[in-house]
Length: 232
Ligand SMILES: [Zn+2]
Image (cartoon, rainbow, N blue to C red; front, top):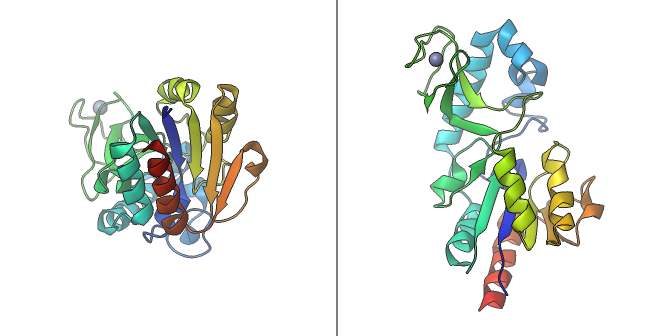
């Protein structure tokens, strides 16, 4: 019987769409230190630098196209006879561009957040430290992304989905970033089957029942085809 599926996606899914990650040795991230551009302390020290970094990432993401793996997950969400919940660590909008809905646990590049009052609104192409909040007018706007050292979004909702799923898949995520690394344990504890789809084996591979190794654009569409064929 087809039950609820929870899919966690990470940077490996968008890598083949040309979006780099902080682990890459070239590209945008390589020009900066993580503590300067992706922590609350870095933002407090130099908000202009951080806004510029995210302005560049926003521009890069807005020009990126979803790949075959994003498309396959959108198909799974549409055609699977039960719920398919996509939880993503990615701040790009590629799941949505592919026609899927996703829970963004690390926020989104196309969102802005007011540090002073908590208001949220669509981010303009370029953000700057002196931008006023549309609600409270404070010059306290920031990208609506979760930085290192901050609590990811929607954790209560995600926990409920994990407790109710019969299959959990982690795709293109190293699993090193907690609390996402705990998702496989939560799903397994709830009795779900667990599968890891990744370019390489990872530190938490032993926690999964099954492993599919290879580029996301090859292994994800094949995995989705098998699931949908089995569901009839
Ligand atoms: Zn505000």
